[in-house]
Length: 105
Image (cartoon, rainbow, N blue to C red):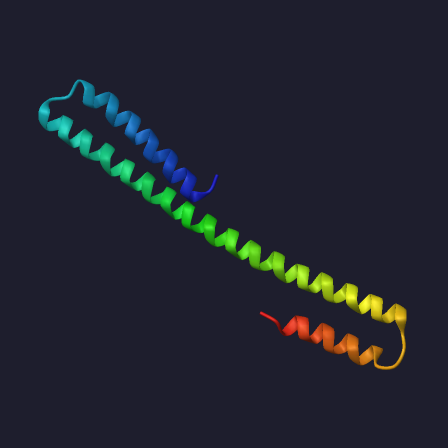
């Protein structure tokens, strides 16, 4: 289990624990339990926001890598077709095509 998931699990356990004790607590103790529960809820929500942000960043990165992979695949296909055709300039075409696609960002 990742560190963040362990933290969430701990916060949820603390929420449950404090909610049970808050039921029979004095006003002063109830406020303490209530504050602990609210703090834990805020921490869990903060971790979920972080997960959400990281998810979208990873999804964006995945899209970039997928596009890059497609460019490489297309360049390789073009090179293979050109190699099958043969003729003058084939080696130069392949060199320029592959170095060009590798230099793209």
